[in-house]
Figure 1 (cartoon, rainbow, N blue to C red):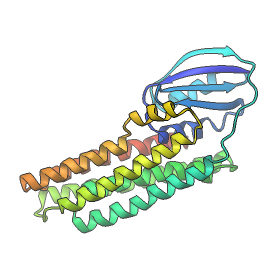
Figure 2 (figure 1 turned 90 degrees about the vertical axis):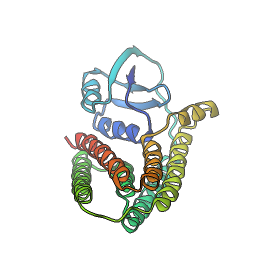
Figure 3 (figure 1 turned 90 degrees about the horizontal axis):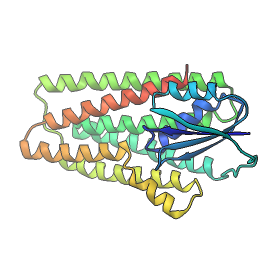
Figure 4 (figure 1 turned 60 degrees about the horizontal axis):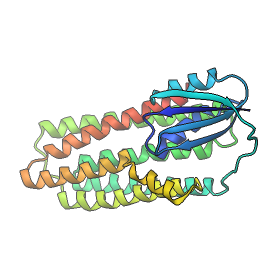
Length: 264
């Protein structure tokens, strides 16, 4: 058995971990993956050569660098029986807030909330693919990933078109109070998801606390929507909401491209 350690500079939340797991799932020589998100490291226990593993990781464009490969006597790995249950939990939370933010975003005329709802949907896709592809064929998994990625891009492009329409049109100001309240609730939901996923690692408490230090992109987006809402009220303009909406739509497309890489 060999143990290869990688540094992955762009992994800062569990959604990237799931993408990596799905990508490496097709390599039969891999026996176990051990993620250290706070230190942005991945340890791969595998048999045989490392070349196919490196190529798969590099294909995700997450800033992968191999640190070392060495032999190990470890052949048994502790499986977390609660992992699937926790994945279902975060899937339900993310999809519920996709519906909540999409609905309140349309009612309050906030593109920031609409865009953030798509970001929640993107995370739902990642967790959903992880769950529904368990035990399925690689072909099935890739088809699901492609469908999810293209659907996500389509929604983001529709969002861009709506931003342009509102930018050049004469729309009512979005309801800044709704933007703030829903974004605060969404950030709490993201925090719960991150906590649950880190808890599933069965690591020491200090490790879980370290993981929480890394503010996920989702929570940064939530804060951005709150700031945009305050600027909408202060400037009496919808432009801050349209700007944050545009930024989030770009992030959503980047996430979709990552999902599509799994389907290759």
